[in-house]
Amino acid sequence: MATDSMVPALAVEGLSKNYGAVQAVRGVDLEVFAGEIVGLVGDNGSGKSTLVRCVAGSQKPDEGTIRINGILQTDSNPHKVRLTGLEVVHQDLSLVDTLDIAANFFLGREKCIEIPGVSPFGFLDYGYMKKFTNQALADLGVNIGSIDRPVGFLSGGQRQMVAVARAITWGESIIILDEPAASLGVEQTKLVLDLVRRLADRNRAVVFISHNMQHVMGVTNRIVVLRLGRKVGDLRTRDTSAREIVELITGSDLGNPV
Image (cartoon, helix red, strand yellow):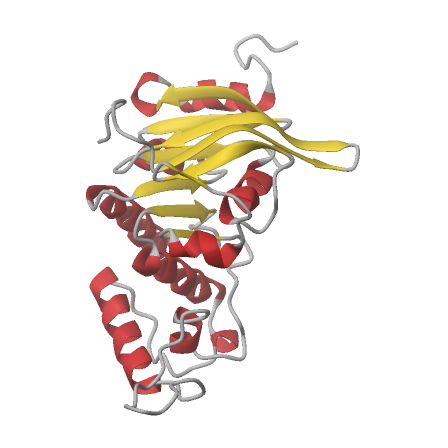
């Protein structure tokens, strides 16, 4: 577990993002340290996805700063952010249905055959990519059968596992998981939650986004709550309860109904 004296793996300060007259995120601060699992929760429209897109470089914030391992991110884009060791599992999974599992695993980081004196561009090393993908999935305990199948032929749960396993494999510093257990059965959900805990044990910083309070309370060290684009709570998981978190999310006192 990280200490306050350490530089955060991810530090967001005063981040705001507007879409015309709509204020999606308003002055949000967020810190996540290496070895820490932070739950990011909030109702639909609370600003979670917008915050993640800004951190991932796919959108530019109107105000505020983002630092990854202490380095200020300027003119970011998804490729530059990935080079910092940050990986995101978005809700849409960002998989290409017509490509097989190994090709999706290496999407954007394809391995080329190296031939002395010959440009490697255009000569993909499919053998290496398939061997690496098989080994990575085996190391994580993910069993989805043959990796030669196009992702479009996989079940929703299998697609989810491919996206999660890919992020865990390539994310050397920070992993952001947006509803990683959605579409999963009981056993696959248990595997994902175990993988999240193992990430923290490997000193990764993890942002865990979920509407399932049982999952959030079970894996996180700290919980940050967004409501209507603002941060309204930042609590240690051991010092709070699912009831208190839901009250912060909704802005209602469940113990005193109107």
